[in-house]
Length: 359
Ligand SMILES: Cc1cc2nc3c(=O)[nH]c(=O)nc-3n(C[C@H](O)[C@H](O)[C@H](O)COP(=O)(O)OP(=O)(O)OC[C@H]3O[C@@H](n4cnc5c(N)ncnc54)[C@H](O)[C@@H]3O)c2cc1C
Image (cartoon, rainbow, N blue to C red; front, side):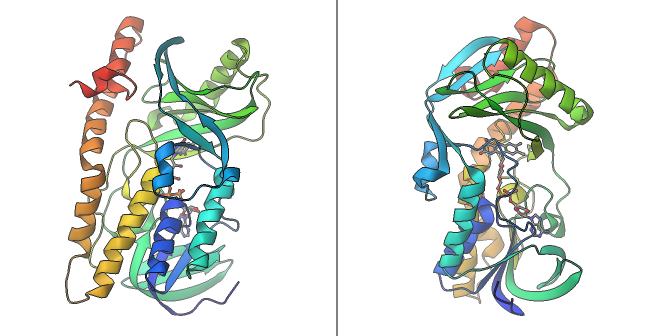
């Protein structure tokens, strides 16, 4: 790896989809970009169910090898019964591979990538990195936090830790291939849902719940997997180690940027509050962040970074997230063990049903 310098136009923290998409665009505009990623290997290990809408190709390149499977749509189950079959084609990705390709594309455009380095503090324009036990300071005219749901940069902008769900997932072998992704709602899984996202002969099988259920998540997922075996959807519950993580559900963070610092992707709360989908939004927000930085860098006298970026993000996500936050609050407040009421509640508050949009 090339030795890193002391000064850059932009320091991007995090090489997930948001960081790599932003870094590529910034480097293409001729800016000196450093991307810092704490993991040794980009994309490894995957903490994601890997489902994206087909529309992702409008914003990012997908090669044939990045797609594990194309799905026809989403089947939603409530209380174990099919309640909706939605034609909403999408891809289930090989995210480790795709994340690496996004980062490689940023590097090919001229961004410098540093893996195995963690941003530990930010003081003004100076970022302190920790690589092993070695500390180093790097200065950037702009600092872009694409550092996920526990973002250092978001905190630095004054944002409190936002609402999140907690998710756990396993890869299991399917009894037979599936054309549809499956989503399951059950009163036992407060504030969340379970999924089976097919990847050819295997599937990502997971469960996300309200963080108050963190202690029960492992048992709930094990129970769900056993039901899938009983229903002959998966062959058995043996699979590689589980993965998981936090999924932001609170919507956009109050402060997205100041005059030199911005956040994008999960760090900015760009994950859809109801679905938890954040991959495409990470790419889109990373690109919007890059646009805002490029504009500010090209006209340093103007002070439009925070306003310009905030307006762009609000225009992209503001309305749909406001609706989603409202539905999430309704769903969690009305959560019930009564099966009939639960079905009505989910229909009013899940994107696959017309009732979601009719309020
Ligand atoms: C279990 C699970 C399943 C999910 N399933 C889906 C799905 O099917 N579809 C979907 O659209 N979304 C899904 N999501 C959400 C999706 O994974 C995220 O929204 C998406 O990864 C956000 O991209 P990002 O670039 O903002 O952040 P991330 O992908 O989290 O990338 C952030 C990067 O920053 C690095 N980093 C963090 N802090 C530092 C630091 N201080 N210094 C250096 N590097 C740092 C991290 O190592 C990481 O590589 C899921 C999330 C979880 C947890």
